[in-house]
Length: 179
View 1: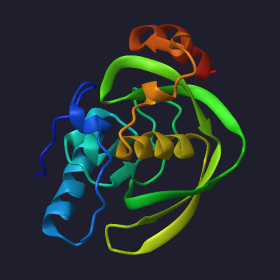
View 2 (view 1 turned 180 degrees about the vertical axis):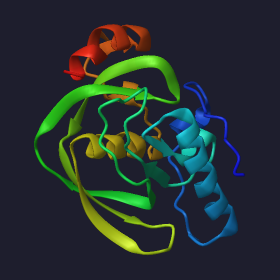
View 3 (view 1 turned 60 degrees about the horizontal axis):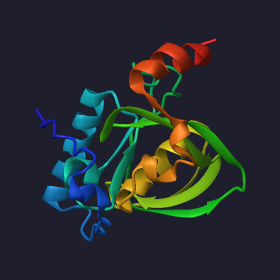
View 4 (view 1 turned 30 degrees about the horizontal axis):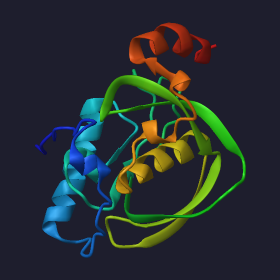
């Protein structure tokens, strides 16, 4: 069984580093890290994870939207491993919505993100792909991509008034998204 890795928490310097490119996708250590990230993501009820969140400063992220306790209305998709991802383009439309982060437990923030983006990345098999992402999946990508650039969602807030505890979010905001 693959290990569940410890999630780096806000304050850990690795979260503020610019992650290094992956030069050899087929390297055993990179493939093992991918497996560990997938296991850690499933175990944590997240919808995305970036390598810096497990103290591995590589340009590697996973987008894995699915309904769970933290995101009950999330669309379902297969986990997508993205190595050396790039944000190629975006639409001008920006939407504010609530985000949480495994590295910033207990807090949600109202974060502005592009609604539609085009990305390019290498798969774990070494293929280079270009893909359009929209809505919640685009939000996940942008959130995880920020981790590769030493940022957390708190850096994107327009105001501290856009913060709420997870407990208050579940009590006041989440029920209104279920109707």
